[in-house]
Structure formats: structure tokens, C-alpha cells
Figure 1 (cartoon, helix red, strand yellow):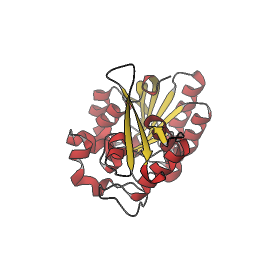
Figure 2 (cartoon, one colour):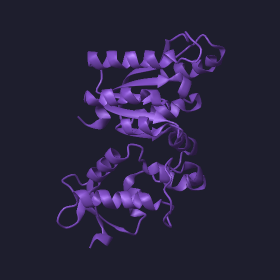
Figure 3 (cartoon, one colour):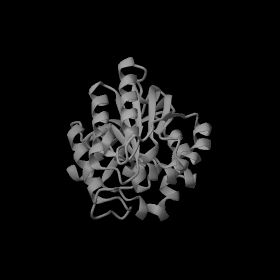
Length: 260
């Protein structure tokens, strides 16, 4: 089933999700499928939760009440996990979107993937590594927020904000185009694993392999809307756009010049 036709369950941890970015988050989710379930979990009796109301109405998100029974214990996490498992066993969706920066959902993401479900995580850059790698794909909310705020192509509008959009990992040296050398090496190493006898690999297959290695990889982290745009900015790779039976569609292949 194509990824963008998936029926998705969107489960949001209100204690660990930025309310100001929620409209942009929901727009991003629509890229990956249809959100048939949209729920947000929290103790809605507390005064600080009142500002969520217009956001939930605007995005048709259902609030799920969970009282904080004991100080220092997060009952919201438990409620969200129980609902996720109910949805899993009822087979109501093909994928899950977990919106949180809390590592407590690491095991949930792992369990959902074990059941064959697509798991997309969305959280801030403070999100712990275990939760990130437990997802099929992880998207930083800072990236989503900046894309919505600029309303311009990422490779143009984000140049000024690139320092604040550096990936959470320490990537070391960068190229003249502002792409960390570690990212160039990741592309080259992944390319070598799937290249044909002529050294070429299909861009779509390359992107899937990179995501399996690093679920939080996103070209927008480096100021590019698509992986193809990022690769084209690097002199190291040769691009070959091959025509298909559809005159409006081309398949993009690339080769590592340094592998010759």
C-alpha cells in the first residue's frame, strides 16, 4: 500500500507537544496518509490546558481526559499507550503518528512496528535517541514549524535559520553548501550498498535505506525540501533523470563519482 494512502491514528501527548505548531503538524501528517483517528491526551481540568481549546476545534482533534492521580506520575502516557494497543488489536489503522518528545513511548513505537504498522514520530529536538530510532520515520517539529512560518521553498527561505536547524547529532565538518560531511558520507555509503554494476542507484530506494539507518534524517534539516535537491547541491554525485512511460514523470538515479 502506498505510504500516502495509509489510514493513520494520530495520538498526541499534550504534556509534550507544542500547541503553537499543531496546525502545521496536522498538515505534515496529511502528506503521509489520512488521519482517521485524532486524539490528544491530558488533564483538561488544569487551568494551563485551556489554551488548547481553539486549536483542537480548528483541527478536529478529540481531547481524551486523563486525571493526574499522583504527583510526579504521568497517567497521560498510560492512557495513550492503552488506546494505541486497542487501535492495534481492532486493526482500525495501518499506521500511527506519535506526537511527543517523551522517551516513555519508545516501547510503544517498537511494539507497533513489530505488529507491522508504520510508525511516524514527531517531536522537538530534545527528544531522546531511543524514541527516535524506534520509529520508522521521525520528524522534528522545529522543521515543520519553520516550513509553515516561511511559506517559501526550504532551500531559499531557511538559509538564515540554518544554524538553529542543525541536526541533533554532532555532524562535524560541513560542505560549501552547508551540508554536514557526515550526511555526505551517509549518502555515499548507502549508495554503495544498492548501486548496480554501473554504480547507479534509484533515488527512492536510496531515501528508504537512509531512513532505515537514521529515522530522523530529513533533507529539511539542512535547508532542502527534497533529497534530490540536497544531492544535486553536492558535486560528489552524478544525477541521471531517466524518462518513463509517463511524459510528466522521470525516475532519478545517482552515482558516486568518487567510487570510480
